[in-house]
Image (cartoon, rainbow, N blue to C red; front, side, top):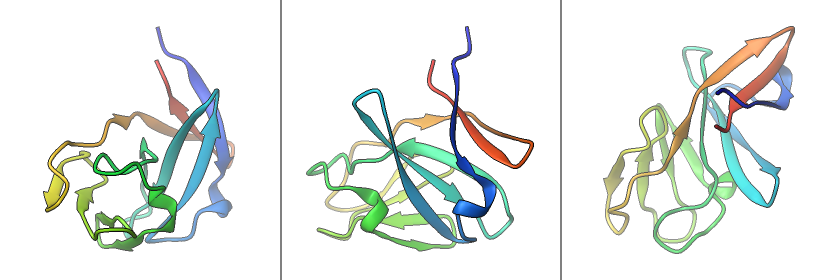
Length: 104
């Protein structure tokens, strides 16, 4: 069963950027791609649990601000050392100018 949660307004996220979203004791990252699509992943790097919202977004890659590990935020796949564990991703939809993520 889906558990859609409102994360932010569409305009809160710049293109090729992300924002941090905290909900129920967990941290998520909401991304807006160069293609104007929205994505969501866990918000902490799988290497040392640093907030990804402080990282650099390039094309479809998020680079962790601490050790420069990289993930493809569309799939969560770890793309560069020292990270080797993928991020969890979440379904995203936009309704009435709001970004919702499915946390089920």
